[in-house]
Image (cartoon, rainbow, N blue to C red; front, side, top):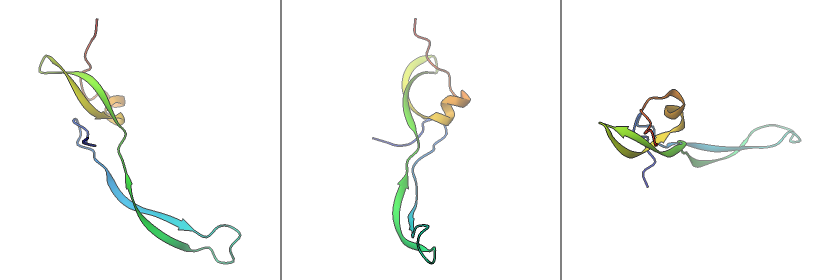
Length: 74
């Protein structure tokens, strides 16, 4: 399943999981770096596109900002 917002195009980004030696260690330092993936919070919503109802995958920041017209169900 695609992890991309249909409105703004937000998609997963990549970075590192950084594990550090704890507070009890004599010298605080980075112990290891492991690749990881940051997924966007994608939700499936029903919206109106060109006057027709359609199911879209939208990130929560676009839902909160109201960047698309939601389908009115009666």
